[in-house]
Amino acid sequence: MGQVIKDSPAAEPRFKARGVDKHFGPVQALTQVDLDLYAGQVTALCGDNGAGKSVLTKCIAGIYEIDHGQFFWEGNPVHVRSPRDAARLGIETVYQDLALADNLDIVQNMFLGRERLRSGLLNEDDMERAATKTLADLRVTTVRSIRQPVASLSGGQRQSVAVAKAVMWNSKLVMLDEPTAALGVVQTKMVLDLVRRLRDRGLAVMVISHNLNDVFEVADRIAVVHLGRLVTQGPASDFDRQSVVDYMTTGASSRSGPRTDADGATSGTR
Image (cartoon, rainbow, N blue to C red):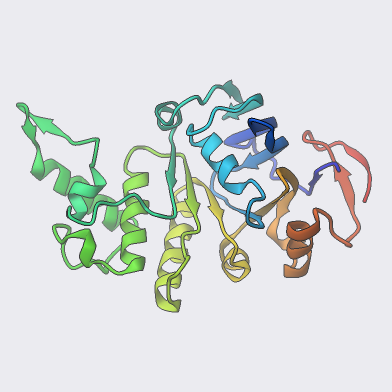
């Protein structure tokens, strides 16, 4: 089945995937995936369990190397073979487990593995200033102290720290894996507000989520993966919950409309 691509913004996507395949032994995890991620927009990546969302995310993040296809960054072909390659481009990922160390404080977590040194010693003052500024810029105001242990934070606060850690390094694309999973109503609102602020700062944001309430609350665009294929993507306003569920569960929707190739040329109806 061909991918359904709805109207796209006029600007060049910050990130594009074209014809991406990934397999693990005999298992074909991704097949001919085309994906567009735009600066200043939130794209929700939806799909059932095992559809390929996590594999696609890890390919973009450099955890897995793609077997076939091409990534483009700001219009230029690029190779992402490692997380270091992704970081150099400005791609950061916040995984569902957040990768935070409970026994360390907020500053230590935000600079973990990227500590700033002065005369061979940790530059604690500089890291504190940078962490404070990043949290303030994102309007994260619920933490009592940037020196409190991460173990003492609520779920929403932990997610905020993980996102702040991701955007400290001149990030241009941030991917968030199930950012509101297991959060309460108030904490979910906090995280979705944070996602909007990332968008407002001009970042490209991809949110992987099963929660369609959250998807329609925050997404500018929606992309759906079904059995390793990205079967549709387009403005969130062109979807309703039932159509997203249809794409997630069957790879198709009963709604009619043009089917286009990755460059926008109409190729028929569905």
